[in-house]
Amino acid sequence: VFSGKVKAANVLASAPSDRNLGAFKELGCKTTHCNSEVLQHCTVVFLATKPSLYRGLPRHQAVPAPPAVPRDHVIVSVAAGVTLQILEELLPAGTKVLRVMPNLPCVVQEGAVVFARGSCAGEQEAALLKSLLSSCGLCEETPESYIDIHTGLSGSGVAYVYLFAEALADGAVKMGMPSALANRIAAQTLLGAAKMILDTGEHPAKLRTDVCTPGGTTIHALHELEKGALRATVMNAVEAATVRARELGKR
Ligand SMILES: NC(=O)c1ccc[n+]([C@@H]2O[C@H](COP(=O)([O-])OP(=O)(O)OC[C@H]3O[C@@H](n4cnc5c(N)ncnc54)[C@H](OP(=O)(O)O)[C@@H]3O)[C@@H](O)[C@H]2O)c1
Image (cartoon, rainbow, N blue to C red):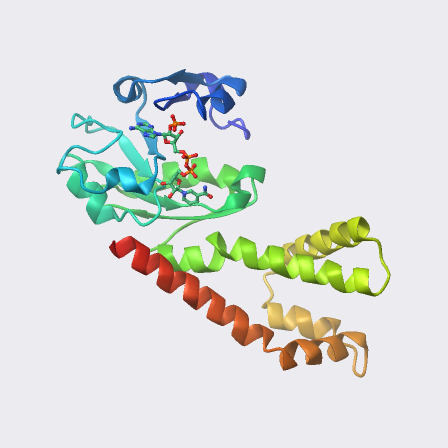
């Protein structure tokens, strides 16, 4: 809707209450409290209810989709930990289903999204989803096994970056810069550094080395980060979140 790829008037959102539907209404989307109405009027259906709603249901009685999912429909689930196997067991045989894992910056169209397709979803459905989700940021099709890794890298990774941004700014505050200015500059530093990785296609190690003048400020600072085992700590964090995502998915 934000990118203009889909007209707001062509979006129909359903939920039991108006709690979240207000935001859709403000964008000009249509809303309903009846899930079947969505299936009647829309061929691409996103399931974005809490993962607990999918568990413990009899087969072929997925919430919110009722059993009669027409063959030409594409069902997309964003529910964390709900596998393609669970989705295919809940939906009628032959349903084209895809599983998506977004991250928070999708709300500012700079997200990192991965998706995997179910056994009945083909190239066409994957291309359609990629085209729609590219409006939310980077969008890549991956094997389903990467989805938990994506959670460790990017879903939870957003929080590691916030922690780093906070520490970066705090360092500047310690050295005498006002906090508000330090926070803005820290955020812009992350944005600029990230954009250079994407725009140049260079490995981060190459870009980091380019900033290091022999005997200069940066190499002195990097030595301190190495003493604090920054790299090993961040790798451990990605591993811990990935393992936890796998555990939660098995429940
Ligand atoms: N938030 C994230 O960053 C993030 C990241 C990755 C994945 N996810 C996944 O996204 C999903 C939604 O998370 P959220 O944080 O956005 O939760 P949320 O704000 O609680 O949204 C869930 C929505 O589902 C609606 N709902 C509940 N039962 C329903 C039913 N039977 N039929 C149709 N709609 C129903 C709820 O309606 P009411 O408004 O009436 O309660 C609510 O609007 C979860 O599966 C989560 O794992 C979220």
